[in-house]
Length: 143
Image 1 (cartoon, rainbow, N blue to C red):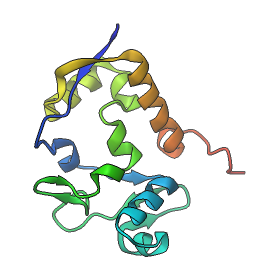
Image 2 (cartoon, rainbow, N blue to C red; image 1 turned 60 degrees about the vertical axis):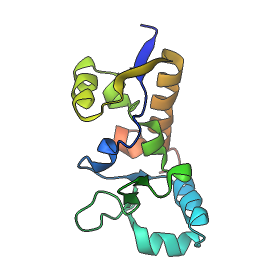
Image 3 (cartoon, rainbow, N blue to C red; image 1 turned 30 degrees about the horizontal axis):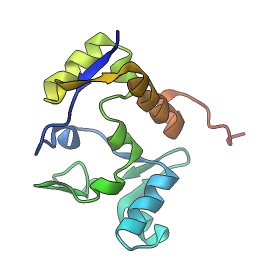
């Protein structure tokens, strides 16, 4: 296989409206806070739910993400790693069935140019590295 065909479609926010959580890395948190001209602690207090192993955005009533607007993502230039890597998440690119299921949600899957396999695998690796707890990978800093 040389790669996967994908291109975000103008005006589409289907992936942002799907049920689930938006997870963050510490770097994601800092970038978004800076973009919004807030301190990281202010941003976290207002927008983040933190557990021992994960950070995620709080969901406002009736939405999946506090930054989703009718015209798209209000923090698009600094969007979280999870959002930037979609649809090249490990669980989607490692299974034809999962990729086909994702295509039912995302009109960009199967559209546009072929994304080289090396780029797809790099994005999947970035997801695993950014969110090890999601993939059952023990954080190297944890005892």
